[in-house]
Length: 177
Image 1 (cartoon, rainbow, N blue to C red):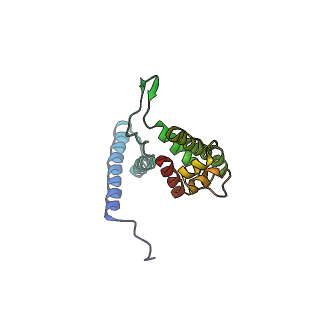
Image 2 (cartoon, rainbow, N blue to C red):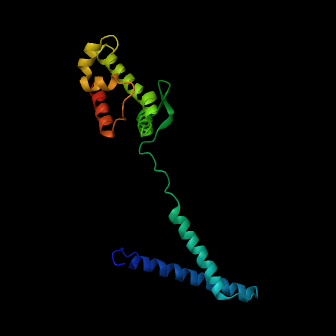
Image 3 (cartoon, one colour):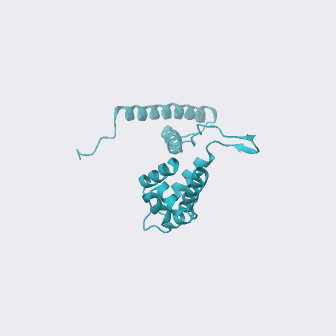
């Protein structure tokens, strides 16, 4: 029994005492109202138990209410348009983050959506930066992306999902292109 950490501390005792005191005061007021104004014969203990249940229910509800969703640090102004396109600076980053979150344990989703998207980004980077594609100039593309990245891109159905560290390395390599 002594191994268990004690949960009843001074702070907990103060909170419990405050709840009991608030309940006693409110129950006293309710009892006075019932007896003096309404001439009802209600035991004080019943008033106290009902008020205590309401106060504890309120505290429990407040404690179990989830925190409000966090606000984005960057306000996306969808009303303002630049060249006819809404000004949303991090929309693509959030989309990639959602996609990468979805692959946890879902090999089919990874093979169907994430892996081809990464390959498309690499192809686009090669086309824009060097004027080549992986299909038209495979030797030059392999030289530019490196053997590890080339192996990653050429594997259609991986035996296992890449770890977060491996995905971070892939993203770093794509950024370096």
